[in-house]
Amino acid sequence: MTTVTYTVPAISCGHCTHTIENEVGELQGVQSVKAEIDSKKVTITFAEPASEEKIKALLAEINYPAEGLITL
Image 1: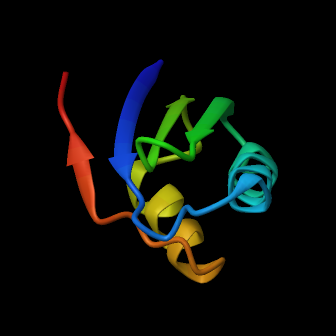
Image 2: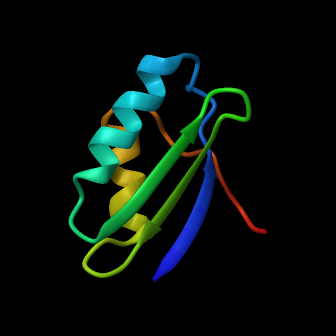
């Protein structure tokens, strides 16, 4: 299981977080998705067949491109 946190500057409201959580949550292998309005962060826990590349591609496709990976 892998957990990543991305900065997503396009998050501005509850609709944004809802869309991200629903869309990314439907990717096979994604266990959890938490999008935050205030910090503009998205934290995703996943395993195969999901990958960082697939997640980032989906975020870009739904107009919420990830701008950076946050390492903890």
